[in-house]
Length: 192
Image 1 (cartoon, helix red, strand yellow):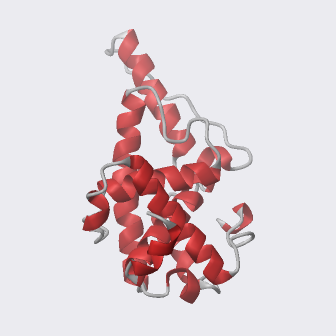
Image 2 (image 1 turned 135 degrees about the vertical axis):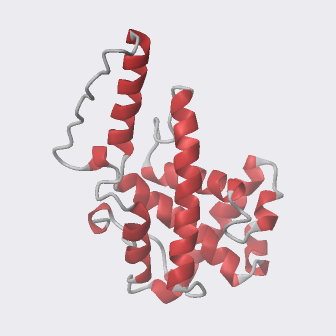
């Protein structure tokens, strides 16, 4: 979708797409492993489990600790930060606070399910990526998977990742032009 067609999207749809990118950007920084002093604890093995199962359970538990939200409520933390942000009317002005929380909840639920599936295949959405790339790629994928829940059914109909990604990037670029850039909008220090 070329940039000039973004204006044709309903304002609510643009807000949801931009919210998704912000949510995943914040989620990336709220991970326990990003916090100073983070040290995972090894789980106690069950003596009745065979060794391969003990290793598998330990690996899942360590990964879960690493990627868990540092305060235990990524949805509440991100939704609160976004709804209380001084630029909120320009960021997601069409969405109500309840809608912001609902969209964040839907995105988080589908992401956590997909992340668990990724762990089962020995990879993670967090692997080898920076916060910006994580936010853009994960928002693109999760909006596609939960487009109906986020009331973006048309987004689910875009089967090519490249096209979905162009839509997301175009919305972010458009929103950045509306608010005068994204630099300093949300910094890692503001996520707590």
